[in-house]
Length: 438
Image 1 (spheres, helix red, strand yellow):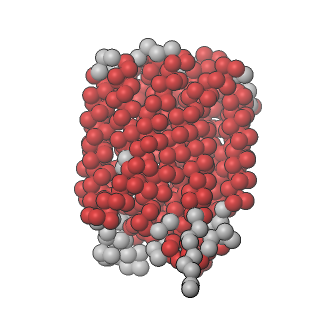
Image 2: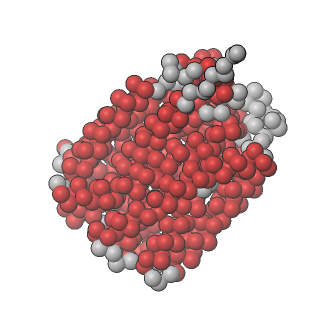
Image 3: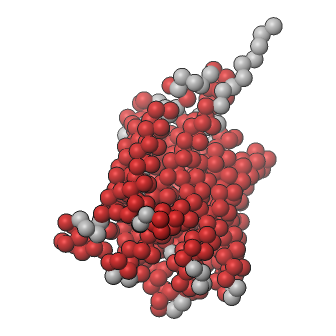
């Protein structure tokens, strides 16, 4: 009697590695927002000046999204991700020395920190589009949003762990040591990724025939010809659905970077929490996201199977962004500090319900150019993130913190409306100028 081979589970081990990379990426991104409490008084920097340091990271991160995604599509995500981790880990460690570098005597302490953080952002930029390329290569369509949600929850866990972990390291040893430790951890993660991963399942020795057949039923792993062929830039940049997706992600980035850059200081300086309790409560929105991200991905996949991608991707994302807007507006006017933390944490968690839909739709729309397309989308999100750390304290100082939250709430509602014009079942035909329904 013929035995049916049980599919191996290597694709989930690859997703676990992407989860680990994303967790590291966000620890290295958010550690400076905690260190700001120590760095600002040491160097006499203001909140507005530190906003420019935050924004320099996001600007470098935004500008390198498309090149990072393009390199992954062309040369494979394994190599590009490895070098990206090494790059940003090195400059994470250099952040500890930014105030004493020769550069500080030329462009000032703020300029030196901004320059180093900008270079850190350049390295981190390659991770999300190459992570999306990995999911496109390794995961069948009916599991993609869930896989993306699991991987993206690494960002939430990293963001949640960073405040208490970095506060403890800084109080115990000093703020500089936190950057040294983060940089060293990155080298270890880069080695693990290169050792255990491949660009796709066809070249991995631990993928059996049953798993390969299951994945290849709908995989988008590019051929060598597709990797090295010309990229249809005009078609990608002119695609209406991709432009609307990028606009909605601009809004998401604007909101998310408030939590990355200012939520800790908002709790300490505006809501009256202590340095340690502020670090504890800063975990709340990111722990919410760690649950909401995978759940949103699972829910999106289930809704797609039952009702189609328009409802499963766009309907869920529309409702999520609307909910985020309402929770932000209510949280802004809530006087009780703990209840405000709950509402604002739920607002970010609600937003993360939509996150896997964003990334899955780039695969749905562009298939073999998923890395480049997701880089374009993420560039838009991080241009929003570039503006947010600088304009948020400006609005707060000119008016108040509540007004900053009102702005985010209104933007979230507008971002939700963008989803009404997106059709994930209408794949972009990159061979000509027309769009066709799949």
